[in-house]
Length: 81
Image (cartoon, rainbow, N blue to C red; front, top):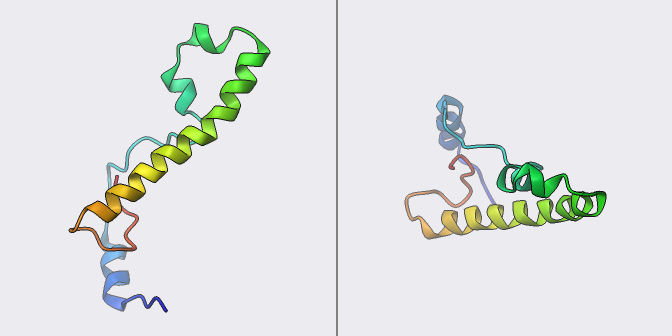
């Protein structure tokens, strides 16, 4: 059973995190590839659309590894970049 301390909730309420990074979900392939490569034909556009969620999942998994590898971050903390 996971219990959340009231002190943790109070400290999270005071956090004003300014630099949380770029929201890449749905835009990672669009920002990575050139416009010439993306806008060639409909098949390429559909293929890039199917790859984009996979790439986002890979980036999120790296963030999950960073969470477990860092001893200074609490186990259930999600407020890091």
